[in-house]
Image (cartoon, rainbow, N blue to C red; front, side):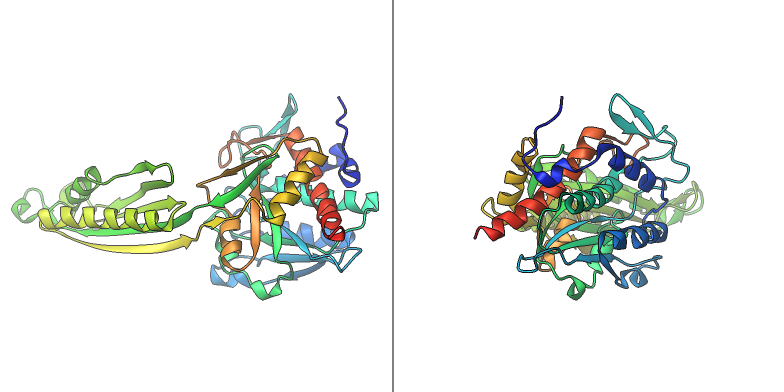
Length: 388
């Protein structure tokens, strides 16, 4: 059944063309830090749509192939404040030799690679939306694309972004597993915590009495540590354990790595303190020592329902006949880092599923609606500012 749209630009989004573009882009191999082929494709494609391109030098901070890409389209009316759309160029795993399969309106890989819908779906949709904007002839303000590298490794490209190169102040990031219509207003604070636990190494047969097993110290600490869902706003996890030399050696050291996320900065700090003190108590009780290091990953954000970005996307979803809803997530995205660096943006759902696995998929409906909503946002952003 044909959906009746009230967005002239969204009507021009071409499903066949978008699916073809997505499949082409998904096949471009670009795991984190190795995005040069993706950048080359965009360097060829975006100028055809009127974008001027700039790369920063973020990659020099982590031995990557290419920096973040910032693309500027002057629009048809420069009295309108510019609007940006952002996503990342990398995938969590390679998509080399990708063989896509379409079944019952859903795009999968053949099960031997990831699909790369996270987030080639947004990249392809942004391009198709700009094609639709141009073909529709609707007036629009300047549009900026902020396309990051090395996102999957921990929002690294965004952290090293050359922010003075960015001209716009407000925008959207399509990068969530929720269906199109999901509007994420709040994201978490997140920090990593590392424990370097020391006991005393010894041979089990020659001097076992001198041994103090660092594994047992760590185990005692973990047993007394609150982990998992701490409350409705806070999560904590230990995800890395490194240590040991030989099966005959009582281990004298072990390193643990974990992470805490919370919507509340105070709760995040309280949980980190609890984890540190719990391990320190265990180390002291069993005659060991522990060094603790805390690394801030990113800050949280919380956008008001009254913000113009929220009002614009709510109207734009209505214009493409998609239901919208407001929510929050403990998942991290470039949204956290961009907001931390003086921009204002929110995360939107584009409907990829089972990401970071060979079962990854996206429905054609969500892919097309991502393109439609991007076009409708550009159109609605212009209309909202012209009416003021």
